[in-house]
Length: 341
Image (tube, rainbow, N blue to C red):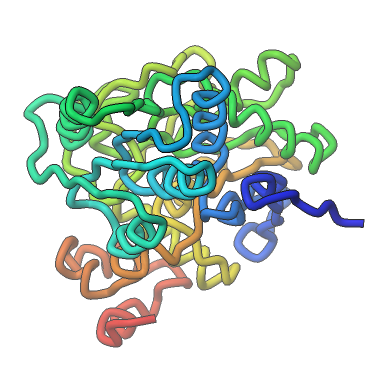
């Protein structure tokens, strides 16, 4: 008998694991952990719920109080649902990269949206958002910063994610590929692996232009992937390897996933797919890998899946050249002309 959740927040977790056997037909087994099946649509539901519940349990936040957070999208939506459920207010600081669909979701949930329009010279849009959060904390009474960037309940929320994966695959997981942002999910899974002395290896999928693993900062178009400031959670020695992908790799991965598996996934999921495609030849035969997909693709219909947005933000000739040897996008030019999915 299926478990019946006592309320909507109780339905967070236990997301499905799907074998990607159309895209990867060799002797290596590849599975996708579908975090978009959480009730507010992303893996950030896990950390948002845990952070809010712990703040209330500790007495730092009471009903009627205000949560303030900086977010590129998914954490904001997760917090918006959690705050609405618990009778709290939410002020979320975003930047112009916020997806229009996500903006609408936040408005429906009743969150107040504050937009910063200019990045900091150091720290980019993330640095600018954090400065605005600090301003709001001084001016808004009974407010608390949920602080997904430092709150230990962020990575702790993903111990359960790793536990689910291990239960679903009978502890037979050789590699797990995880996109970076706050690095909460990456380090949460790492904590579980270390505690249980597992042999599973973590491969971090970072964005080109992110500073998390070094290198110069660069403008990024895919929200929630990479960061303009160092992570307070990241312990590099626990990461087996790092793959850097460009924004266009995220788009390519999303298109390939959609065409071959009929999975509409978010931008960072596409980055994870592209990273695995490049990395798979290093893996031994019969290895088992899990790709963590943070969210679904509906929030990216105006960007990643929008030919007009792609054309305006990337050079279509370059894209066509990169795609010309890939079966999934052999009709890419027709896709661009059609202007919609």
